[in-house]
Image 1 (cartoon, rainbow, N blue to C red):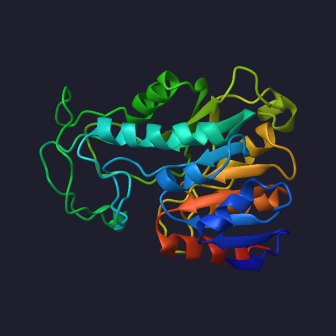
Image 2 (tube, one colour):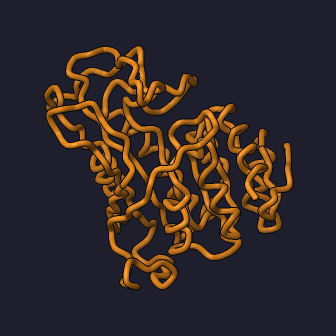
Length: 293
């Protein structure tokens, strides 16, 4: 176990053994943790009812190759991709407290139109891929796949309460080169709960003119200086944590990537556990936490 003292308060540990992981469920263990490994394996090591809230953005299907063995997102079919995530989130639901909730950001994609590769995009060079899955059964070339709703309905069927679809509107979205449809400027965030009754304080976040928070959130994308290219903005974490957690609550991100969920949790006086398959991203997350003041 490697531990640093965060400028934001509690210590943050990089946990590397099963023995370390079992400590997280102990109320006396007050450290936040980054854990290197596959969420499908690591989640089984946590006790039931451990976390108050989950904020996460899993890898998107057929959009990026993270070049790490075992990664989710390069399945041959969208159904296999959804099935992989349902397995993960069933374990997430088990380790979530009865009054807990999950805020899930997921993007969509288009069918490949028969192409087996994606050329380099000058605006997004990291999106070039040497392989692409075939067009899903029942869809046509250039169809929007509908990944977010396929996943949302699968999770609903698996027992989650699907409470709200949030539209994350990006006022500063990147331009696209397509000429036969509007430029995409939004993604979905799904608000799901473990139980019918759950913790939610609507007074902590208000919308424009002090109205109740609406289901469309205008939040600019924010670039990061580090290598990870799929970070979401801090505000996309601040709102969920304000609504559904209290200080010192334990927050989980099973796909923490470059660490934004952890950074925001620490800033808000919460603790976090972040799981990440790619050890390089864990190092990036740790550097960002150390640098954040």
